[in-house]
Length: 378
Image (cartoon, rainbow, N blue to C red; front, side):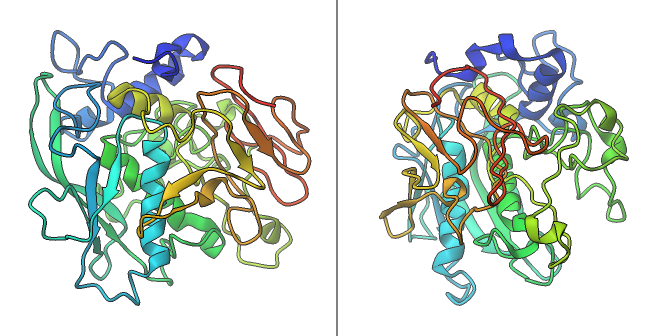
């Protein structure tokens, strides 16, 4: 794999971080599938869920399958009113997919043909009471023993503004939770599991997953696939969180001018990148290959539903976009810039401990930068 694949650079990771990556990806660092080839079947989300690990590939590390030569096709259910599946909602989905394809060798392409025989991903409206969630529809065996290939899947969207899922095109409604939910479900689409032994569908009456925490890195600071907030003092490993005292409350929430909704990650976080690359290898689309500006005056683009190139909102800190971001930055080329008012990479003023990646707030842009490679920032 390419030398910018973070999986090739495990030396900066702790044993617990490596265990979290394996648990999330369902695959060991040497491409083994737990439960096969003499490996024990424990230690992954998929062994906990009693299901096989799965990707869109015919074998690990082969990237987008040949049945989707230009990328996995996705489309929106045309029976849903355009007043519900608005351009903003549809482009929020496109951006959630781009956040993953920019860091791993998997690509997505929009089609208006919802009935295509080669449609990979169907975007549908959640039934009443249903949550935003991803579901594999068709799986088949691969040449990697124990690994399934997904050939069709769906993501259902709950767009009820009275429920926590809110609006996936908004970073302010309920702390931007719907943005997080869409990126989280897109992680499941790739084949990533949760980072602990829990699942919202396991017990309808369970609301606290903190006691099922895997280790100190099973927390949203390190993975968007985690259920554990960094402020949750009931978490089993709360006293071992690193960084400690992370608080993503918005400025307005801290001053009591809006209901308290802590911000959540809007991109895949640090360990998610290792997990996705363990499954698919390094990215090939070149979006994050150097010369990127993250933050104000961002120049990072995605392909919108209409085929045009638009700013990827997760990295655009301008008012009205992701202006209180909780994000992790990844780039494998030179000459990148973090454009924030009071912090530039690699040294940053700390207002208080924050995230792996970056989680600033207005006029006090502060970062807890965790860099796997230690280069390419200015």
